[in-house]
Image (cartoon, rainbow, N blue to C red; front, side, top):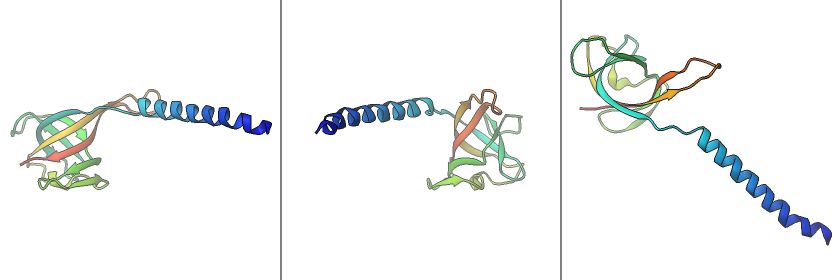
Length: 123
């Protein structure tokens, strides 16, 4: 009978520990993307872009886009395994896009900086 008296407090303790663990994981691993819009000029493989403010040939900010989720003009979302095919590989062509960018703090474990987490090709 004495073992039953300890079951409820132990169960409550385990539930509280699980809740704190889940809360810590969610709060440490969440980010809100900055949304930017512009004209993407791809590299020859379509894995990176120069993002420009307008549809011209000025240099823009460079971003790696392979690995980012993406949606084409039809609105269908894809994983980014092979890169967003909607931007193409023609280095002379510009595609109107909207990007979600998260600034990564890699600390001492890698390269930090802005990362494209999603890309949507616009009309």
